[in-house]
Structure formats: C-alpha cells, structure tokens
Length: 341
Ligand code: ATP
Image (cartoon, rainbow, N blue to C red; front, side, top):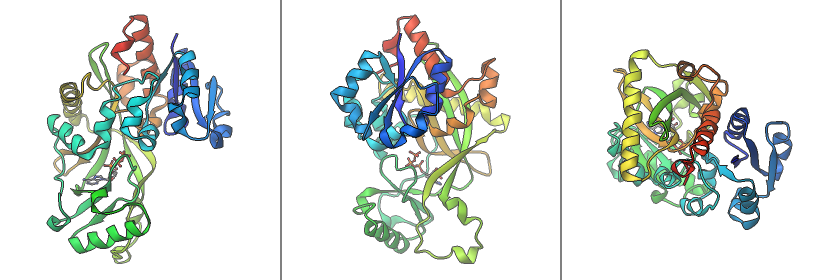
C-alpha cells in the first residue's frame, strides 16, 4: 500500500488529513522548528525531521520515503524552495507531472503554455521604456507576490526597482517581469483532472488577501500618493467565492483547454490539481495572469468540501482527499505510473 508524504507547510494539513480520511498512511517532512505545530495532529503518522527541506534530496530522507512506499505531493513550498532541476532530480515518485512545474516558474514558458491554452492574458511589457499605462512588476519564480509593485511610467518603475535592489531582493531589471495591470474581480479557479477517469472536476474558487495592497483601499487617496512606497502583493489569507452560475461553462472550457495544451506541450500533460488565476472585468470576461500546476493553498478553505464539490460528491471532499482517492484508485487498477512522474 502506498503512503502519502509532503513538506510541512502550505497545505500539508489538508493533504494529510485527506489521505487519512482515505485510509492511507501519512508522512510529513518537517522542519525541526515546526515540530511542535505538526505533532498536534493525530492524522500524521510519521514525522521526518529535517533542518531544511532540501534534505529531501539526500539519501537518508529518500530511503525513509522509499521504505514507506511514499508518493510525494508537491505544493507551493516545494516550488518556492527548490529550482526545477532539483525538483526533477527527486527520486521519490511525485504525484502529477513534475516537468510542468518548470513551466510554472519560468515566465516565458508560462506565457507559451497559457497562449496554447487560449487563455486571455495581460500583455507583457518587455522593456521599462515601453511602459505607458499601469503595469505590475513581478519577480521570477513563485515569489508569492512579495516585492511586486505597480508603476505607471519608467521613472516610477526605476525608483521602485532601485529600492528593491537596495533591499537585496533583486539584482536588476532582469529579475523583474512587467505585465499590464488588469482591474476587476480577482478569482483563483481550482480544478482537478483525473487521467484515470478522463474527467475534469471544478473544485472551487477563492480570492486572496494580499498585504499590503489590500490595506491601501482603507487609506484615503491623498495618503496613498506616496509613489516611493512598494505595495507588495504578499499572500496572507484566502477566502471563498461563488461565481455567477452563467460563468461556469466558460470555467470548464478554460480548464479543458489548459489540459489539452499541457498534454501537447508537456507530456504526459496536466494531471491532478491545478489553478487558473486572473480577473473578471466589467463584462465578466476573464483575463488570466497566472496558473499553478499543482495544488494551491486556496484549497485549504474547502477542507470540508466546497459548494462545487458538493455537486459532484455526496461526502465532504477536499482537494487533499481527492488526490488520495486518485492514488488509491490508480493502485487498485495497477495504473500508478499514469499519475506520478
Ligand atoms: P503565486 O505563485 O503565489 O501564484 P506569483 O509569484 O506567481 O504568485 P502572481 O500570482 O502572478 O505571482 O501575482 C501575485 C499577485 O499579484 C496576484 O495574486 C494578483 O493580486 C496580482 N497580479 C498579478 N498579475 C496581475 C495583473 N496582470 N493584473 C492585476 N493584478 C495582478
């Protein structure tokens, strides 16, 4: 029987609770400083204590995972703390397509995949000299919005870039990606695709609360006019959304196009959880600025199921539990190679 393993952060509690609900053994790779937190939860069977998550690449950790027949579930912390080469070198079987994670962290590849998926995206601005409207400057990789800023012209951009250089967050222009800013209602669309059933499930929608950009709306406009301030988009929390029902058909189409595009560009394609992230404008048109090719932390809202999973399952179904169920089914049908890389 397989066991489920993950890194102690991001959505580990949801993943391991879901695995336990499906009757599977659970392992947590846990930084020593977080041991006290994770010992509180009795659905975690084993803790592998490490000083740093990079120890997952070391023989000692690998052999514990191998002995326990573990499947590793990747999440945002793995992407944030390891580069794609390191992730590809992990010997423990990874749920989903680990090769697509490189497409998530490389902005050029990301753009290519989103275009192939026919997603409407904001234009990128290749050179700060070409800024002629509001742009968002983002750091490469899954920085989670930290150190991102807005600028309306080259001067403003230069000032804020220099501030980030001074703070040691970037080295220069090459560390920033500029994109037109899109206004509207932010929505993070969560999906699960099962290659075993060849079925797309729409799991839920969340919005993020990002600091300090969210706090700005509480301040009178004249006090916001300090252009020297970097308004970070650092994610602090998530809350649930429910979409107008008339938008759902397009949501499924976006998810299906994404699956089709990824199977063409990144074999074996997208399987398991993913998220398409963007903005609905005043005409309810969706522009997508980002995807995550793995479970997102916004699914933590729905540990007991979401309004949309209620339509598919007659029991509480979290994304973590859904993943465990897929792994169990693959094992029973002898198809585990179809869902891991
Ligand atoms: P993560 O990996 O956590 O998703 P990331 O580093 O890839 O983060 P994005 O998701 O692209 O970064 O952006 C972070 C935040 O910045 C978004 O949640 C959103 O609030 C804002 N944002 C990004 N791009 C745009 C855009 N083009 N228009 C408006 N807001 C944007």
